[in-house]
Image (cartoon, rainbow, N blue to C red):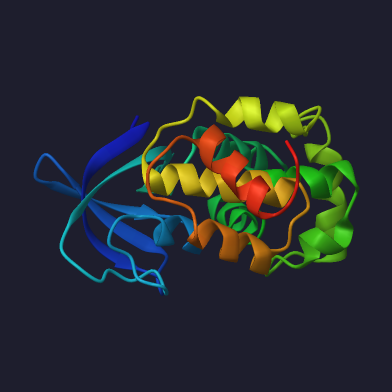
Length: 212
């Protein structure tokens, strides 16, 4: 089974939610969330490709059925783990799991589960109150928040230093710390393109006037 891909991004299509990644002369169609597509090299503000091929690394969940195979791509291992936790819930297939991930990053989803936030899950297209309530029960023992802010930072500090992955992890951490979408977007846009997660997260928190 395919666990990851590293290769050239030939195409990004935000409309279909797919990227075409070429590895060793073979093009792989990979389904990703809109946020994941935006962090691939060469994607524009809307996620579509704006320039020539760029190299990317994505973690893969390889779904195999009798007459079909499908690849789902993720920027971090944690994203893939959360996706697979969603798949373990009754009645949740890859399409719904990816839809949940498209609305809530891993930390936000863990917060929703920890707080029994039915309304948060109901923001996912196709999820009603009964389904949301059932998911919260099933995911309770599968998705846990880090113990504290230091735990969040420590868990992220050893991640890859690829800019796209690093900034995705910084966004996830800031979301988990309670910052809103607009202030996160503004501060992340001002961060440099190099550096590890720990350094960039500290810089972001300094800009947000939160002592670490």
